[in-house]
Structures are given as structure tokens and as C-alpha cells.
Length: 157
Image 1 (cartoon, rainbow, N blue to C red):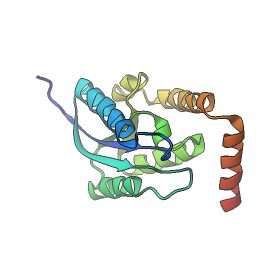
Image 2 (cartoon, helix red, strand yellow; image 1 turned 60 degrees about the vertical axis):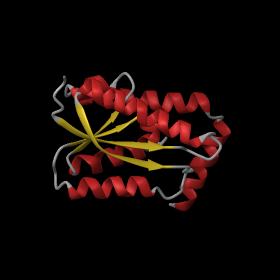
Image 3 (cartoon, rainbow, N blue to C red; image 1 turned 30 degrees about the vertical axis):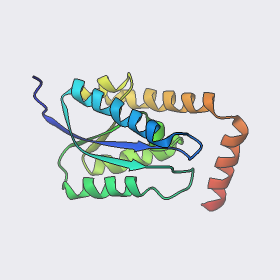
Image 4 (cartoon, rainbow, N blue to C red; image 1 turned 180 degrees about the vertical axis):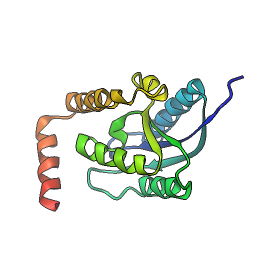
């Protein structure tokens, strides 16, 4: 039996209601994170979910996650997600969120391949994970939708 010395939480998000059935997508993300946690010896204390959430929609699950991290008063926490796109599809947004997590002594760990290196302290792989996440997103979403989303976001700034 593996001793679980790390505390983690899971964050799952469905990008939109067009991802049907939403519950199956979310449960798949949660299951992948739980498998990763089990293999890495991470005790999952909470699961936070946002569904369905569009590009600029409020994210109460993410807000609750940040509140939970603040309540832990700096205790190390791993934030598991099936991939970095669950937080955002914008690399700069992910970097800002990661910086905020660092202030709260939390680290983002996507449950796919590159995550194993993070657990071992190889955080330089974050850039590779961010690039992979963005490449996966760009390969799935038509470029005109990406441009429209960025234009809408810039217009709101």
C-alpha cells in the first residue's frame, strides 16, 4: 500500500454545453486525476467542478478552489486537472493562475504524461505542458473561433 504524503485537490471543467454529455466528460476528467493521484501517492481532499463554462463565464468552482487554498494558510497543495486547458486555453492566463497558486503554496499538475516530472520537482516542464496544451487546443478548434474569442476578450479589458 502506498503512503500518501501529498495533499491534492482536483479541478474539472467543461468548456461549454456543446460537450455532451457534460457529466461524462467531467467524470472522465475526475477519474483521470484520481488515477494519477493514486499512482503519485497524492491524497485527494476535494474536487472542484465548473460545468458548463464558456470563454468568459464566471467559474464558481475555480473561485471555491482559490478560497480553499487560501484557507489552508500556505500548506502545500497539488492542484490536479486532466490538462491545463481546464484552467484556460490562454497561456498567459495559466501563467497568472500558476503565479497566484505559488503564492498560496499550490502547484498545478495536469494528469497526462508530463505531470510525473512535476511531482519529482522538475517544474521547468511547465512550459512544455503549456505549449502542449495550447497545441492540443489549436488542433481541435477552428482558427476563426480562437481569433473571435481573443478579440472579445481584448474588447472587455
